Amino acid sequence: SCKSEYALLALIELAIAYDQGEPLQIRQIAAQQHIPDRYLEQLLATLRRGGIVRSQRGAEGGYLLAREPWKITLFDVLA
Image 1 (tube, one colour):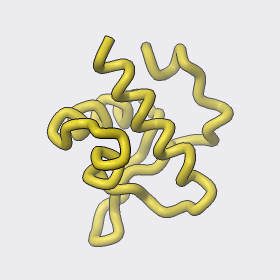
Image 2 (cartoon, helix red, strand yellow):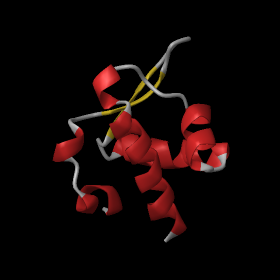
Image 3 (cartoon, one colour):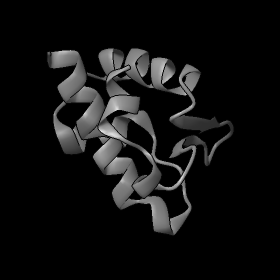
């Protein structure tokens, strides 16, 4: 589905940035992967509730992977 595809694209962006340890903002991910901001915001909230991503508040805030990229399976994302 489109929802699954967008979720995977967002997670790819977060996985690429994982080693830097700095959170990515929704607008950065949306621009890189051509995902509507509002839709991405909802997807990331769902992934956060599922324990796949975590959010960081503040001026330097955004989203990070909640665990190492190699420990996240496709099943985790789709479930």
